[in-house]
Image 1 (cartoon, rainbow, N blue to C red):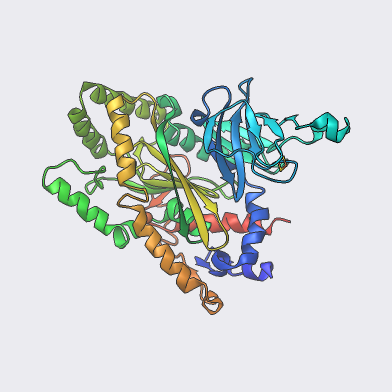
Image 2: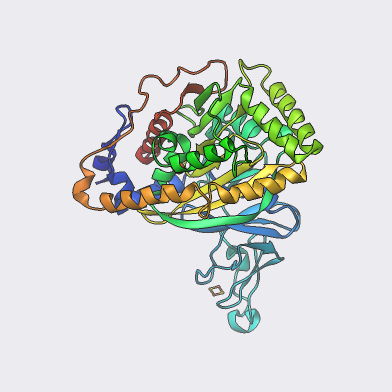
Length: 447
Ligand code: FES
Ligand code: FE
């Protein structure tokens, strides 16, 4: 019984029952309570820049298509034919006037309207109400400074209130780089299936910096340091070993969707200096851009008590992950953790870079994205190994008795600098994970 399972989520004590990561009934319940209710990211407007562009994605485990119709309006359509449920869009992305179902040939416009039915007059004798048989249109769609969100819940709160002011500030200014010219898509998507409940990987991005330096990614750090010690360009930006002022940002409040960032650097000059020296190797365009960028960041933060400069990782409830890797030279990586049953998820990952960055930076960003948080890179496979082993040890139901532990930095949550949006605490901590499960629980308990 779900209520009993939920009583095993004691986020205040930092104890979470593993059952919520393994049990199929919990999975079914959260499809309804979380994924059918939440605002979910479905892409970025730069994926559908032109009339008749489309790109596929998922909302939970529901395949959807994001389209830009002939009038320039963006729609999110459920990729499922109204006749007998076949998927109508067969390609990942493209440009087309509509979709024709491969089963009986019904054809739909990019606004979801049913436009054509083979042999309609001869077989339906004028009795088919085509207006009622369009593709299902996701009722709530919103564009937040380029990032596209959708919700299946017609009564969902506005995206504004779902995010709240603090999250909006960070997302807009810092992640989506709205004041810096916005973001541009880099070529290529990455996808992979991985063992592990979607929540385990979401909470990893929203708050688990502990694993980075304690065990999982130390081989990556060692490689980086080796490059640097030989005076060579590191394949990715180096870990800022000397960075001052690295914090964990817990941005969203109790009522809003949790948004957390790991290793946010505030009021520190050393990463800027590092970026500057790297920019010098890339040419004058890059140097000018880095200076311009720093000025804009300082302007954006002028009313705050410190200017944030960079971040490493982040996450927005329920299933968006972010990587910033400390450096604008790598751009931004967006990851969706799509649920695939209780013990598996599928990652859909794309990369973006600040639009105003010079081409040399964009080229470098592509290369680094592939070397780092990527299934063929040096970071992501280490995480997957852990998740594989966690799944093997977590499947036996007898192992659901003993709770997982999320007690890191309990009570120290707000000991970072004040005067920024949200709460800054020490890094690493498990504060963001505790907030993640608190919010998850709130959604699961809603009647
Ligand atoms: Fe699509 Fe029949 S299932 S036309
Ligand atoms: Fe990791």
